[in-house]
Image (cartoon, rainbow, N blue to C red; front, side):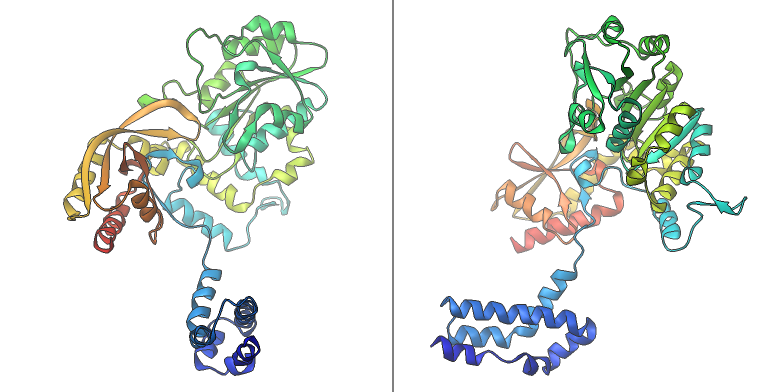
Length: 464
């Protein structure tokens, strides 16, 4: 029986003559279509061999080869990285790409990406230049620092600093700052990989200035102050000020390195950021070296920015590992455009992360009410309730931003099924579930995406 079935499988040559398959070849390429066709026929033979296919099933499968190939080819060529709508209320949402970029920034990056550039060419001298020329002067003017360089992310910045300054020597870190952040990035482990020797100082909840003083030895290379990211130690605690640590570092002729994390450059009036450390304040306190992320509160591309004393930055720049961690022309273009917004003083109006942070709760409520009004369904129950948004990305931990939420339940489906339906929509919508309700926080949904949310909820209502 199986031998007869094998004989009924059409040959590749006969299939290639079918008009539908020829259209696919014209649209894609012969080689690409042929590979998928060979794979499909191999699957048919495997099913026949295992006794999983009879004559009628084989006939049905071969008659629909064109449809099958069309679907497979579309799936193979579909991009994996997709635009999503973030309705979670987490503004700097790491899993969703952190800070979204402005359309004008994307246009600037596109302009650079599609042409040759002066990435490492000095147009004035007509000779080879250095990549950092495209951001260093702007950062120096903006922050009044001596030098700046950039690598591919803040974790790489910490690694490069430690490897350059402290390989084989001790780096002092408070026990309360030996943090783990997203992706299992642990300060002790990154120090080991960098070659630095970790010297723990103080206790988890209390570290004093004299703890650092007592720990300094001949082979101590630096003091590292770490941003505590997404957690806080409260209660019976103590932490020396930056000024105290700078005094100790200067006294012992070693640098104080401040991993400031979020890239919050200047103090603003936003209430949830009053306790967040700023780059400006760290420089004013005398920090010798500071590193921070480009795609958190800074509002730009993924990058690790390192600023501080020129002699130290120059040493890091000359580290052979810097080449492995350097950024490309698109990141330089995006970072320069972002910093330009700060230099002009327009960042709170032009950078999406700051627009989302500062959107009034009443504006969000009005949009939520409009969406609720337009969802007429016997399947979905939509209400409006007060809630909170989060800064995210390890910035301003535990600080909450007042917002209004669309709270949705279904009379036929569980919250998990509704959440899955939204996440599977043609433009995926990310939400959260609390108290058996699916919650949509429009603070992180751009106003021009409201119609898509309405369409997704309407489609769920009509197909459920």
